[in-house]
Length: 563
Image 1: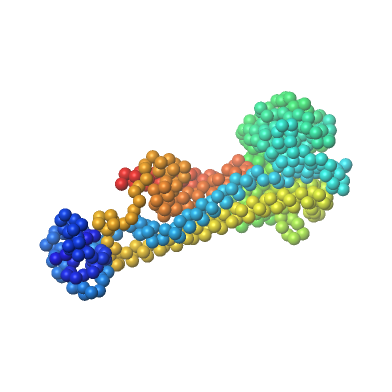
Image 2: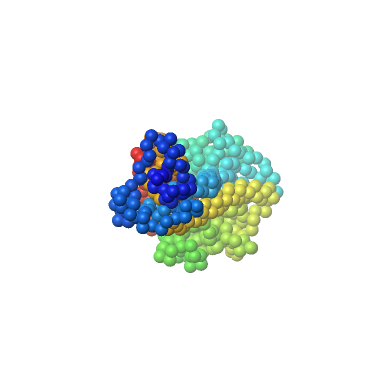
């Protein structure tokens, strides 16, 4: 009588392969030479799930058909149930290469689109394009430039003293001839002379990183601080005169004030993005006046605006941002921002009394829409504007709604350069998202294949026993503390450390999917500070799901380390 050297099962005389585990047999003499005593038959599991004794095992073996001793027999069907975790282990043993390749591609894709999204708010883009009587001015997120009437560059300012320019560089001309620029990345207002020389800066101790400004006719500088939801009045020399208002919905209160303009009668007008209204201040910007008008209704949701990407139950489709007063036509043009990707090129046209006249949609001759994020009046009564996303500077005719590109050659060259930077970043993000989508498809294929493999392993009698499991080449679990620390960094990372690649890949993929909308929203430079209640609920659910992923990851690491 001989026994299998691997599982200890009784073997037929002369059998070359074990009928239970399929391993190649060694002679009893060899077996006994390598062991002090022959291994006892391993306990076998009966069909009822109980451990069978040796007599019952013998009766079962006798009832089975006798195998041909000269032909290798397939593994024997023993366990009635097979844990799904065994499928993952079998998958790792069979397909380590492809799984590792999917993991590498997943990491590369995540790095690509996260890098693109991280760089997006800081890419150099055109901010304000403003023709004047004696030249043209252009600001980007990193520079302020002046061109002559033919479009040749006269000077370019990229620094303000020892500080670099960085941010949404709105600029205004003061009564003293100086240029006041909103250096939002430094929480300051920078002052330049007409030759581009930096003079001074102020407001760093009182301003947030999101504000717009307007130089009043008396020389003061009125700032709408969207980050702190109030107004600040500075002198021409940079001294803070007073702070006006606080966050709220009542008269004299503001919620994300995002646009400032002065009307011909001297009163100042403040566009509130979140309150969907405009409040007026008296001529000296001393106190909010009683006159205010709503920017809701048709102005916020014109029927002509595309609605394919919006739920039909959303009352508001767009939010007011910047505005410009047209003294030639006694009109007020309000730029509306859209919380979706597709630009609608929408500008609301009002009279000075706040009556909504019509929606104006800005589009190029090829039919593509343009978003007028920053608007200024030109000396000949046209409206100059820039589209920050598309890196376009142009002129809009309010009478005909005709849009043409900036006529200056060097400015168009600058737009082309900036558009190339933006397109390269978009291409990087597109590559990352495409690779990530391919990895998700591969992951779904792995899961589907695991189900079929599970069924196949149960059908062909995949053996799960202590002897079989110990015969596998399995790395020892890693230490608990490093695994927990890595799991805290990112769900799924600890599983890769403990060599549970498939489970880690699932956790990491789901976590990235949940993080993408939250991360992109937080890095969006056009975030309006207010979202419909549905979106708030969605983000809350996503945050709880991420927390759940962390908990699952840590619990799994603890269980693995304890084993």
